[in-house]
Image (tube, rainbow, N blue to C red; front, side):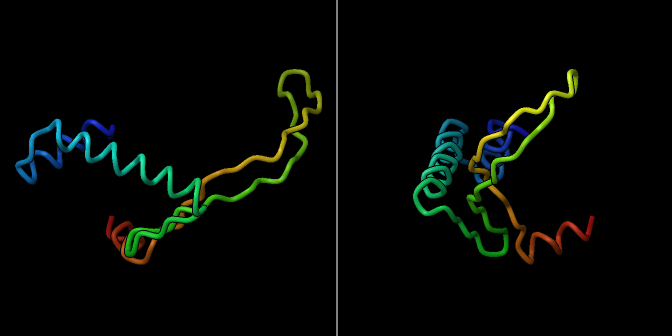
Length: 92
């Protein structure tokens, strides 16, 4: 599902104009990014926790030449699903 499809679903469900829901969805996503940059953690009860982690530098390999390639340290976002999220997924 795309961001646009999500906005349109919300628009249909709540009877709000599609343009408004698209702006709201984009606004929420913008804030999620800002929060993760600033606080490194976003907890949404019953949904899950987004957290910024640091991956250690390591040595990778070029699959074609098998040559060793250094991979630098970097930041990644990890997601840990919440209790309700896990329960709903088990229902599938």
